[in-house]
Image (cartoon, rainbow, N blue to C red; front, side):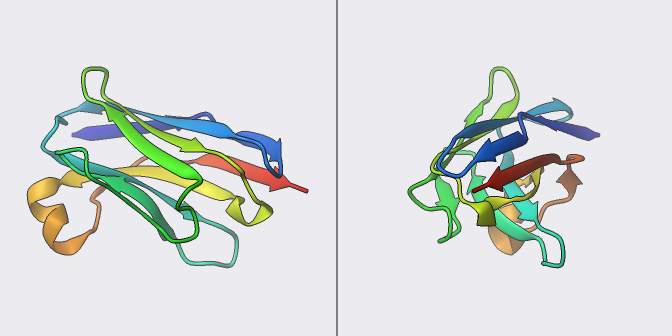
Length: 122
């Protein structure tokens, strides 16, 4: 019942910035925790950032200080501001959602978007 659609990906040079958006629809509200994960060819999917119902955020060490996750509950949009991009940030980025009552226990998501590609060149 939750539908997520990402946008904003593209190709940029190292040091550049991108802002990803995830439009959420269906049976979703502020009781859902949301996040971003990425997967590069030949690598496992890794969590990038998350935000809970109170606005508390968490980041992977590899993106701390460069990426910022935020949400607009009124518009049902999740954002990922990515600055100082590096070639190693190249990946398919997916947004995800899960009821916070479950997410706080297991840190897993049941709902996923189709992904948006981010390519960073040097």
